[in-house]
Image (cartoon, rainbow, N blue to C red; front, side):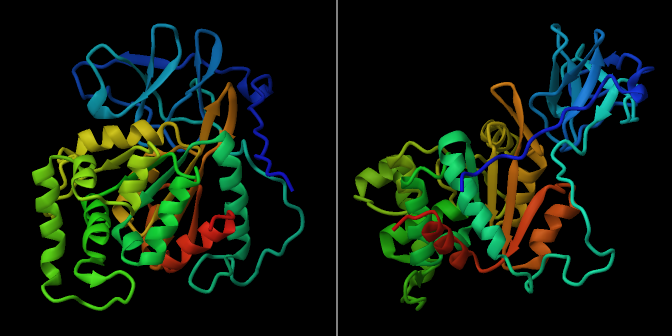
Length: 363
């Protein structure tokens, strides 16, 4: 059966509840990086602003930012740190349209009839059966390969096993990956797997610790830094497998954003977190599906950048977001941070990747 995106229902701005709507109020930012008092903070949902006698949708949004009215009356959504003095910032904290701000939370709702008010196992935990979620994900990825932009957010556990590392590489080669976001550890241990066949000194196939294996990741880091870049390291040492190798081979961009605990790091790692965030958002702003795996902080960071919708060729469609981790705490943390549209799957990440590879029909 052909995959179909859910239909988006726009607000009916001719409804009586919008009849007395005021123009959205704007106040100029008084200095760089500072919003005026009573600013309106954006959410993950589609938001409309009544400007110049017309309801205007913020085309590219993210939560916890501010809406800025451009000269052509279109809406830009900016992080506070990116505000410039004189930016016309929307103010007001009602969301029902009465002050020219409307947050549309039900655009993709599907009517469901019946069902009991009380039922068991309505949450998502290690006891949840995820079979339907997997089937939906396979269909979604096949659709997105031709019609979307899929961003994968990877933790280092993705490369601690030979099969999962190979599965992720196959997904990249198969066209199911449009960008990879990760940290220094993912890149380092992926290259360690290519050079030594280990991750943190442990054989990625047998899981046996190797003599002096604790040197392996820093030996690799030192070699990459001597080469000057991941690409040059791949050429210098004849690397022929792995996630970063596959990204380079198939022109899939990757963004590695550092943390305070990094070794090395790899030359490509962004040490300035805001520079890293800017580069992450460059791809998140194009994403129609985001899949975060076994990396709590990078997944939450990506989730906070990802709205529940995307405007593609003038049409509003949903943005799908998956958080996959063996820890219930890790996947639920994203929901607690406001990314309410996330689909959580509690499972071993190595099993998840192999299942996805097979589910989309890759060998």
